[in-house]
Length: 484
Ligand SMILES: Cc1cc2nc3c(=O)[nH]c(=O)nc-3n(C[C@H](O)[C@H](O)[C@H](O)COP(=O)(O)OP(=O)(O)OC[C@H]3O[C@@H](n4cnc5c(N)ncnc54)[C@H](O)[C@@H]3O)c2cc1C
Image 1 (spheres, protein in one colour):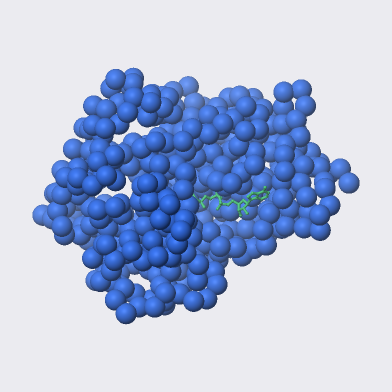
Image 2: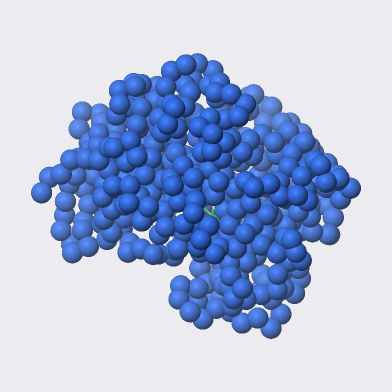
């Protein structure tokens, strides 16, 4: 059997189901090949408002996600920086008054991803589970399809005008068509994580927040998923690898015991004993980007393209934002509205920019712990940023960084700006969140604020100027690009 589709998407995580739905909404024939049977476990449970109020609305799943009963998240609570007292990173412009689009959810990813994938199928995407994509099919300098094995072991080939690699961090296609991964040295951390059957909650109204607490060896996340389920993970340096490998569970408990703020929330709370939450899992080498986000016939989105450090909960946002961009660009190609290099160039520029914003913000965010002298935090000081990392960062974000030499200065200024905004939080009035008067915060979360506007009103409220000089603007239906 030799089938042909307009688009083949590899992977049914948030990135894959988002791009597939955006393309299918324009009436194109889309096949999505997913290796596993859904629902399946995945880490990445703390979402940002842009996913909930932007992406979910564009995809048409707002009501279903709202009805799923996920924990409402108003922001993040951090024991981080110079003071010992926790502070709130509220998504709302006012520190105390939430707006309708300034909340997100803490989700069990098995359920959330399943909602998005079933929605893709409802929009006409041909979703096939148990299909393991082995390689791309290429000819004459262009990717023209993929080779895969079905659940019953049959080898098949399918052709398409565009292939989307949304296979996540384990993608087999990462080297296809000239791509390659650049790993970050600065964020070369290790995560060890598991679950408790409950746990105390932060005081109202922030009881649904993610809590991130820095300690000597790194930092811990504490995510309230349900009354009887809490996700707890430690992010530590790779030097701990041999200890973690020997016994992930023992290492995980040891890290929790070393952080009093989290340990005290879990006193006398048993660990979870039911699948998939009964395991302690480990992930490493997860901060990277690929050198090319697209090449003729192939587009990379989500973790297949890039990911950086989980402390800001930006993974699903970046994955689904990249997928929306990719869907628009593919639609513009399929409708012959724009040539491929212009359309996918727009996708790559915007996506890299967004990834770069978070990358830059995260370096500054880690620098807030500058008083800590432990090995982990010493390696995370901007002053210690080595030349390779600074050059790689400048290469990643292009126009964002004004040259290799200026990167350190720029990041230090951003870190100081951020610290001073956090210091002002304690005395903030109800009207203006000082975090958003910080340049680095406002810029990093700007796109996340625009996405819900595009979803609700069809365009950003501050106009439809191209995001990039000489760029293109959103088509009237929000599903493609058009020239101004
Ligand atoms: C420690 C850690 C903590 C994190 N915490 C957060 C957080 O709190 N919030 C957040 O937003 N993000 C977080 N993330 C990031 C988040 O997990 C990812 O960014 C997100 O899951 C990316 O979505 P995706 O669709 O690109 O990939 P995935 O969700 O990984 O989906 C990829 C899919 O592709 C399928 N697949 C793989 N190979 C093949 C193949 N060969 N053929 C067919 N199908 C295939 C897989 O089965 C999978 O279903 C965290 C990441 C880490 C490492």
